[in-house]
Image (cartoon, rainbow, N blue to C red; front, side, top):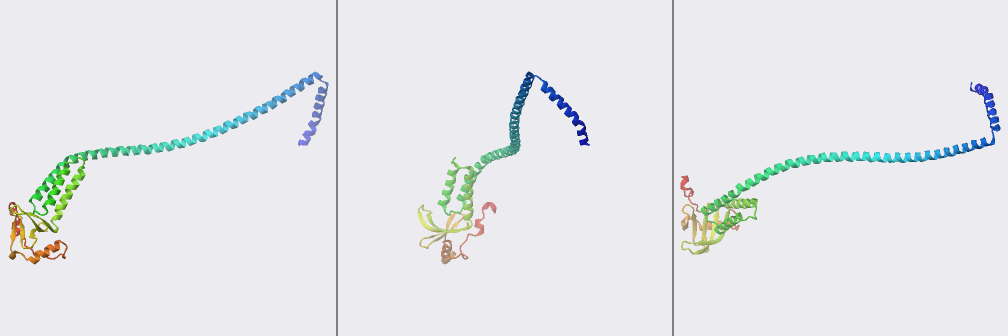
Length: 276
């Protein structure tokens, strides 16, 4: 179908082309020069347009590249903003927890201050009670125990020592006194006689049940009577010399622990009058 159409219009096209060619040949030279000038201007304008289009395209490419960079930066900033918001939420939670902790600590601090106001008088009462107890107890290790009480009294008055340390030292003194009731000890000490003379003797303490001393030559053995708070001399019929010697050896770790046969005050002598 197409070839037949071409065969139909071909004669018409040839006639038109011939007519325009004849017309072009018949135009004057000035007209041709005008047409040539117009064609050159059109060509230059086309070239200028092409250059302008290339320059515009380059600018468009640069703008697109800058736009992509800005968009990438924008996405990064959004991610940073999201991270910062999450971090701020965590900080808000931490701050809230710290406020709660601050309130709790403030309450505890107030209770500590109140406790200190109460515990200092308690420490003084405990020290006084310990002093009275030592004074009424059987008189073993008098120098050591009195010096401990003296140190506690001095410690309580020192402002550079914390209340906790003062309380610890008082409790430590109580523990030491408590241990005395379960220990077997032998030591050498000074005895002040009724004539107010000093005499060196060997003391033996078994808990708080027995306190006795023996002269260095072993000729005299005396038992402490807590009810009368006096030293009670013992004669040979009241104790076995070998047993007392063995007790001193056990207390000094010179013999193995064994059953000791020693004189003990009668139970009724240890019961205070108020308890009878």
